[in-house]
Length: 343
Ligand SMILES: [Zn+2]
Image (cartoon, rainbow, N blue to C red; front, side, top):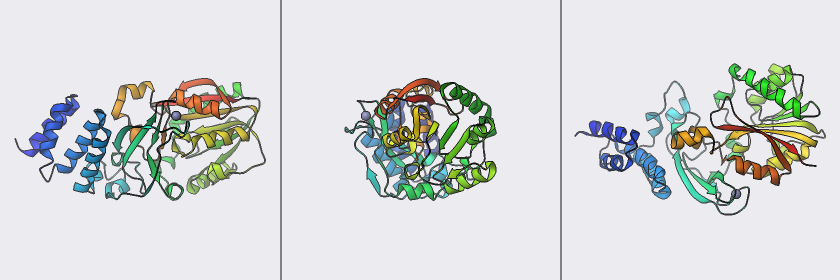
């Protein structure tokens, strides 16, 4: 059997869930120059499914050593110029061994190669080790770039530049629900992105203020809506004001210190103020079904992967009680949790 036929057969075996036979075939394919890198990549995926985290990591690194431009094999040039031209280079990282919620050591959980996602960013390591805290059921990145703030503030993924109009009706339903919980209409939104939620909040007469770490996004939204927008990291944001509602949509998974974010949110809210959070849930119905095909494992910017249980724990530690849970209608596998500031 020539390498191309063998590769096709190995792919089919893996697709059918026959990882043991697929592994044998991919091991043979590592000996050929044209299929070697892809075979190591697939071996990395197989060892991850078999919970051999260390071996999975070694194979993913071997895949890049064999072919530094491996990403181009997975990514459509039209969709993402950057990842298409990406060549592997290890970046310096701050290691994270302790759960950011409990401060106890987390176990190695899994390994994913992020270069297959078109949102992969320059400055991150493409091979990600995730750790899990068994105490609070929280998953977190085992490391992040030592210049993370610079990486985030100097890049602006295009997916958050054009507002996604299809999100607007659902956001309106969600804000209508929040109106029933809140006692006032002063709202702070952290991470405005393309400004979909900001637009709907303005339509519904919320008195909205925004914070956005990426200057380009903040300027776009401020220009479009004429609402106050501060281009700073939330942790550096200062104000004399208090808010009735604070929105943390798709923010917590990006931060090194999610508890510090929640504690700051608590300080900025009035008594019994409302906090709304959207974040991916690794124990969502979607993730249970998708397993390692869940794309959230491969988003390089995400440093935390909450479960409902770990989010409840974090909220409780920061002085909140959960009052509502919904699964997101526009992000597969994300949860939308509303909490009230405890008095
Ligand atoms: Zn924990």
